[in-house]
Amino acid sequence: MPCASEPNAGEPFGWRWDAARTGEPVVAPRRTTRLHRLGLGLLGGSALGGVALGLGFLGFVDGLARMERVPPDRADGIVVLTGGAQRIGDAIDLLASGYGRRLLITGVNERTSRDEIARLNPSQRDLIACCVDLDYRARNTIGNAIETRRWMRRHRFSTVAVVTSNYHMPRTLIELDHVLEGADHVIPHPVVADGFDAGRWWQCAGTARLLAAEYAKFLVAWLRTRFEDDPEQSRAAILIGRGKPVKMVAEPLPRGTLRAAAEPRL
Image 1 (cartoon, rainbow, N blue to C red):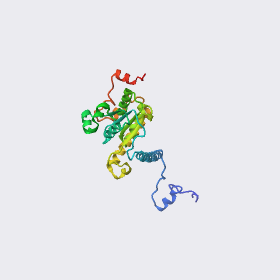
Image 2: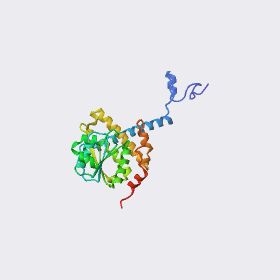
Image 3: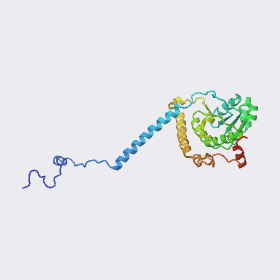
C-alpha cells in the first residue's frame, strides 16, 4: 500500500493537482520569450520615436515666421528661390529699397523670360534689366544653394539675403549653411503667403500636409548634410528628385568659369 504522502501514479504535481481534481482544463504557464521581449522593445522604441518626431514637428512649426519683417541688415546680394507666391515680388522690393546690390532668381522655369518678370513688375522694369540675374540650372533646393554660392563667388559677395517661403526657410538655411560653410553669410527674409497660417495648421488639412512634408524634407536635408562633403556631387539629390527630369543637382559650369569665380580678389 503506497504512503499517503505520495501521489497516485499518473496524477499531476503542485498547482495542477487541484485543477485535475476539479476537472478544469490544465493550462501550461505562460513564459516570456526572447522574441516577446524583442517585440516589446521595438514597440517601446517606436512609441518613443513617434513622440520625438511629434515634438520635433511642433518645434519646427513653432519656429516658423508668422509675419514678414524688414531685414535687420543690408547684404551684398539678394537671392530668391522660385516656387512660392509673392517671393519674387518681395525680393524685387528689397532690391529697390537698397537691401542688396544685385538679385539672383534661382530655379527659374525655362519658359520664363526676363521680359515676363518685368511685365509682372512694371514699376521695376529698369531695375530688372540692370541688376537681376536669372538662374535656369538649379533643379531643387540643393541646386539653389549651389547656384547661390557660384553667383556670390562670381560677384565677390560675402553676404546674401535669402528670400523664400517661411515654411521652406529652415531647409534652405541648412543647404546654404552647408555650401557656404557657415550661416553667418546669410540674412533670412521669410515670406508669409496670404491665407497661410502656420499657427493654426491643424484646422486646415492642406496646411497640415504641406508642413508635414516640409518637416520630413528638413530632416532628410539635415541628415544628408551631416555625411555629405561636396553637394555639387550629391547623389542623394538625384535620388530625391527621382520621378522628375532630374539628372543632376545643378548643371556644371565650364571649368574656366568656375575657376575664375573661385579665385580671390586681389
